[in-house]
Amino acid sequence: MNRLGPLVEKEQKAYDRRRELAPPPAHQATVDPRVQRALGFLLAHVAENITLARLAKEVGVSAPHLSRLFRLELAESPHAFLTHMKMDAARKALLADERLSVRLVAWQLGRSSPSHFAKAFAQVHGSTPAIWRPRELARSRRAAAERSFRDRE
Image (spheres, rainbow, N blue to C red):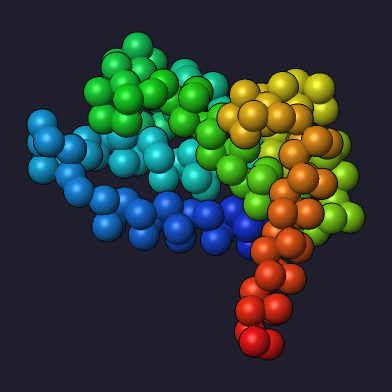
């Protein structure tokens, strides 16, 4: 059973909601429909290793053109967008269940190498998952304890 299924689904809903609330880019009223299709495909296949060629084929444009569209619309490449999306899903999974190993989270997000996953995670979140998770769990426990203390006053 894939434990990330609900997390990925929740992330997709949150992403959709952010897109609804976000102001349109200054240079045009809506995001290019080809980029929207690409984003939908990436969100639906977050656990897979998707190449730019495959994504471009799904959208119906050339790989270089899709890359240009992403940079124009989102100010980052499709690869960077997918990496950020996967690392955000990893962050949520690591915090949601302490029993999940970093290796399992990496595997469920389509990363076969835990070291490659840790490097990508560190680039996005500032430290490796092994360092980041205990620090964030301690931070959230402190915050919960402080809220509990304030509620008693």
